[in-house]
Length: 460
Length: 164
Image 1: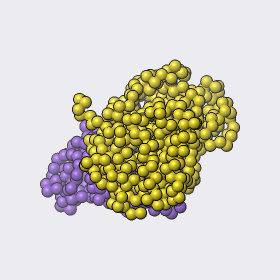
Image 2: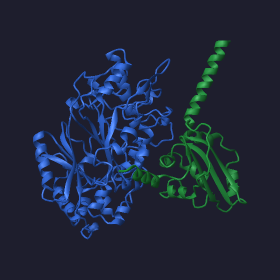
Image 3: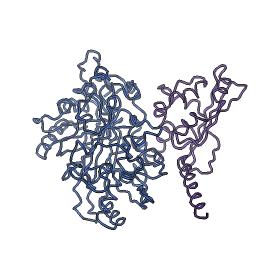
Image 4: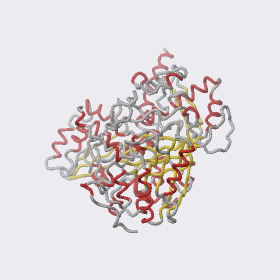
C-alpha cells in the first residue's frame, strides 16, 4: 500500500492518552468529577483544555504533567449536550458498563453492586487521568487541575486514586507488563517488533476508515466525534498473597512455582515470552523491547510452550486463531495500564489488607467489538480454544472454582480450584473527545471552517 | 445502582431468541424473492457437503441448521441452534465468509448483505423467538461435543489395542 492511501491522523487534535505511552517512571492520579451545573461544567472545561495533552506535543519536558479527560454518558448530559446528540451515541455507552454486567461476567465479587462509589452510578460524570514523572511535578499538575474548578461550587470531586510505577516496572503480581499495543496505522508511534501489521486508525479513533472500510457516522455532530474514541475503564484489586499461596500449593519447588506462574501469564516475570523462552526466564530477553514481543504462535500451535489459556494468548491471540472463523483484527484495543498501591513485600504470603492493583484504560472506537468481545469471549469463556467454560487464569471470575489447562506430553497438566486473583473495584465506559470536540463541549467557537458551531445554546 | 435498575437495563440490550445453558435457538422467517424458492432448491441440491460443509464447520458454534420453504414457495424459515451470541460474531463472519453467507440468504426478501450496516437490525426484525426450546446437552458446545467424540475414538482405539 502506498503512503497516499493512509490518511494522516490529526495528531494535534487527538488526546495523548490514546496514541502515546505514558511516561516511565510515572506518578499520577485518576479523578472523578460530578457536574451539577452545566455552565460551571463548561467553565471548568474551558480552563482544563490548555492542560489536556495532545498526541503531537505529548511529553514536553517543560510541562509538569499531562491531563487526559473523558466523559461518561451522564457527564455529557450534565454538561448540556443536546438530547439528539446524546441519542446518537452507541447503546452500550449510553447504558454504561454496570448495565452490561451479565455480558461482561461482572458477577459475584465483581458485581456492580460491590463497586466503589461512584462507579456504576449516574453520579460519575468526568474522569481525569493526570500523569507526571515525579511527585513534585504531580503536585504541580494536580494544583493546575484543581484550579480549573476550585471556585465552581457545583463541580464536586467524587473519587481520587493515586497511582505510581512499581520497582522495575512490574505489576503487583511481579510481572513486567504493558509490553504490547496494536500498531495504529499512521499514528507515528514507535513500532517494536511483534506489534503486528498496521491496523486501520478507524478501529481506535473516529474520523478515519476502520478495518471494515467504514468511517464512523455517529455520534453526532461530526465535530464531536472527530478524533474522539471510547474507553473502558477497569479498576482491579489484585490479590497478590492469594496468587503466591496458590502457586506454593500447586508446585513442589520454587522453580515450579515460577513455571506455573509463567504458564498462567504467558510470559516470565522479566517479560520474556514463553514462546521464545519456554523452559526458564531470560531477563535479558525480557528487558529488550526489540525482542520481548517479537513472536507469533505458529510454532506453538499445540500450546506446549504457551498454553492456549494463558492470559496474553487469550487477550491478544496474534496468529493463534488463524484457522478459526475469527477476524482478530476487529478485536484489538489500545491498552494504557497503571498500577496503584504498595508492592506486597517479596516472599510475603499473608495479605496485608492494602489495596493494590491496576487501572486499565482499554481504548477503541467499537466498545462492543473490542472490549466487550474480548472480555466476554476470550477472558471469561474457553469455548473459542475448545476449553469449555475455562476462563483467563489471571482475570477470570470463576468464583474460586477456576481451572487452568497446561498442555503437556504425554498428559496435560490441569490446575483446579483457582481462586479469583483480580477483582473489579469499579469501571465505566467513557468517551474521550478530540481537542476541537472539547472546545465544542465547552461552548467555545470551534476553529474549523467546516464546523462553526458550538454547544453554547444548550440547556443550562 | 439497584438490582432492579440493572435488570431493566440488561433486558433492553438483550436480543430475541430463546436460550438454555449456552445453547441459543435462532429462527428467521422471511418472504422469499420471486422465484427464490426454486433457486434455493438448486443452491442446496447437494446439501451441506464439500466446501459448504467445510465453511460451516469453520464457524464451530453451529449445532444444526435448516432452511424450510413453505406457504406455496413464498416464505422461508431458517432455524438453527448455536453456542453463544450471534451478534458478537457477525462482523467476523462478514470479514471471513461474506460470499458464502450472502449466497445462502440472498433470496430472503430485504436481506441487506452480511456487511451492510443494517444487517443486525434486519436479523432482529425477521427473528421469531421460540415458544419452547429444548436441548439434550445445553451445557455442551459444538467444540465440547467434537472434542468428546475425538476422545472417545482415541479411547476406543486404545481399548481395542489393549484387548488384541
